[in-house]
Image (cartoon, rainbow, N blue to C red; front, side, top):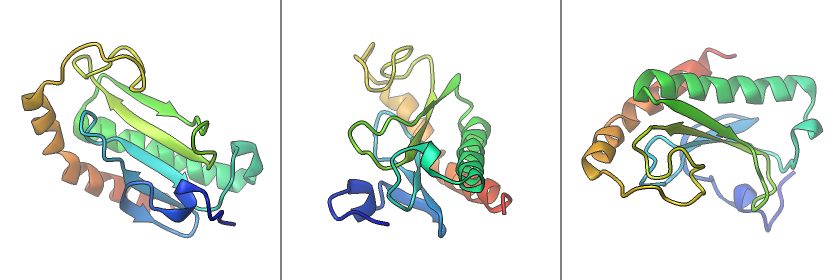
Length: 144
């Protein structure tokens, strides 16, 4: 089911890395966080408990595959996983690579900035995004 007034039903939710009949994985345009990914369930569902067991497993295996790809390619200090949905009540997971020098660390990316962005470092991380796309696609393709 899709809702006409839902942002994630109407749009992709980012730049598509891969999509199938159940979900899509997108890169979020967040300049301070290269490699920020969303895993979005295609149908309009608000909560994990609305999914069948096999659907929950498929979704979470995809989230974990994205996390693994980020760790492999970006070598972050930490990965943040979040499924909030307060602003967009359509089931989706944020998978965010975190670094000690990122704009908000150790605060959430939605918190108060702790420092100025380091453009040279961000440039180097942005250069890895194509490799990250490939790693995500490869890891998720092995799930089926």
